[in-house]
Image 1 (tube, rainbow, N blue to C red):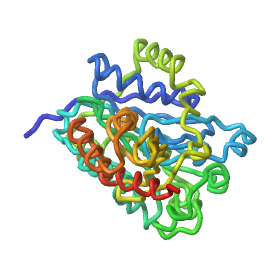
Image 2 (spheres, one colour):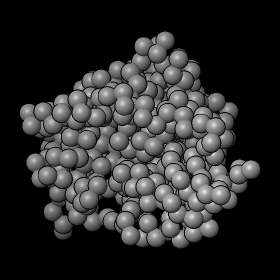
Image 3 (cartoon, rainbow, N blue to C red):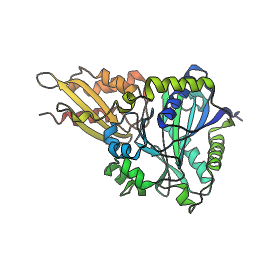
Image 4 (cartoon, helix red, strand yellow):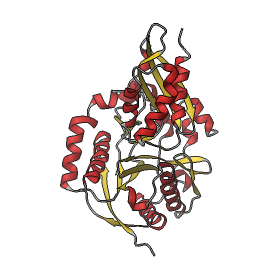
Length: 358
């Protein structure tokens, strides 16, 4: 019988959204450096909206409404779509070594972790199921969204649990495309989600009980041994440094805003199994047949996130008739992990944008 792998469990409570994201990055960097052990973290946000790592923030969030409501505005280090979070939900995340579970595919990893989380929720008396690529549902309605990535040998994977939710408030703060809702048979965002409060007729299990159910399922399904502990002073210091230098700053949060506004930018989207990829493209040359620069936005997942700006840099100056080979060659050489998206999805987004040439 394989011995269970020890995992520290911590709960960092309610913190400002940018502080929570800085803590994510601190745990990742600490784990890569060998100072942070394999860890499960629980966390809670005050009213906040979070854009995904690669999203154009003003396209995904209703920023005037967010500012009027006084909610926190941040950007995650993971891909995926925009979220509204408050004290009615809590987050869970795992930071661990790739060898711990012996899973090398991000898609396989997502399935194993999400099925474990679904098992934990089901143990409370509901029928939770994993829905690829990254949702946990009850009767076709989302109760948990998830996402993650590899960074070297470190894996970071996170999700949320909807205990209670003001669906109307969420819908007013996020710009949720009708096409995304239609994929799930929902006419509006509030109907797409379900909460433990609704499922338990207004009397959901305490959050502490839900967390213990998740830990028990992670132990059973993933073969780990969770043990409660505390975040260290060193991790807190590193989180503050990351907050001050990057994640807490407006430049990081608003750095990808609305690239399609510029007159010389060609923009188009491609929706594939791994999410929506939008290419914002500038061309050059007498025939406008060479890439001057490109920016990719969307709710896709790649690992690690820095692969996307590396791809954008690699495509500068590439003749457009060579773009398919250039994209495929980049991913082959980079060893990137794509959850469901494929190199061809990035190529198709570029081709769709270029189709708008005069």
